[in-house]
Image (tube, rainbow over all chains, first blue to last red; front, side):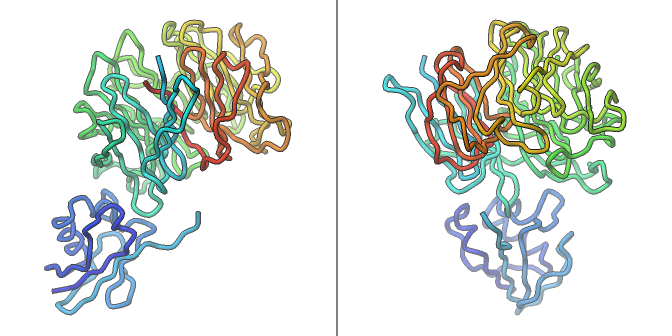
Length: 90
Length: 357
């Protein structure tokens, strides 16, 4: 099953958050599965239409996802996913 | 009665309390998170805070124990078919206003949002629904952003004798009134000027920075507009410009609870420059409905000020007034603005200041 790691910044809101292994064949499925374990986290990653928030990035095996609108990028059993926040000032 | 002050700042919610020894910093919440608006619901004492996470979206937080614990409430969501004026899908961009409903509707809560949304809750904020009557108003495609990319709703006036009688301010769209609880809306912009439009007297497209009503004389409305200060004595049927001297450009306005002719503003130098007038900080007040204005400067710095006071960052409760600025200064007056005292010069930029109990 794909593995996912998330930026530590999200631990502020989800203190028990750590690396996860989740059943998913697309990024959208992975985000939904993650929300099942950490209710509400989906709203931090995507907007109410399911599109990736502007300042959030998702990488699959080091490559940024292509489909930011519906998160349709495919995952396989060995995929390693990293969910990061873009850096910003202030 | 002692008061609290709720400050939505770029770095969190800051609460001050009035004590026998003066105002004291009481507590800080959501440290590090921008709080776009915070308010106490006077009906039940619930504290509300809208969080504007740069990365993680807009969140709504509620505390029923005076800030000891907070719970995240599901943020309002635009319906799937909702499109912005430019045809793009509408998603929640900003929570600009949290407005508790009247005592007669104990579960009612309103949110003003970008893009152009008025959301309504009837279950104490557990769930919110977009007010379709306003969203579907045919003029919405003519609304534009003012300072933000999309139009937003920042002002709501609920008539104290009729909870179905509502008025909202949209920047930039104008003033809209509903007499049927939000089902239908009509523009109320006669007499306003929008000098940034090809037709300054156009019905749609105005930028009312803030609209407030005198609580005991609700037919008297005050408006700090992008293009001047305006007042209406007939519930918005007609507005009259009452700008004279420094009070012209600014964002905030407060009106007396009893005397509808008495109001306060914090003027900025101009739309083009947007800093304190003459480099010094002043509050303008009138007691004759805006015919004449007096500048109040006692206790306020008079040089080198770059303070700007946003629309929700001036409030009044009885003789007490307070305002806070984008440069993190907080001033309070206990005598209707005659003399001011600095409470803090080290806050983060302040987005809102509201009194509570």
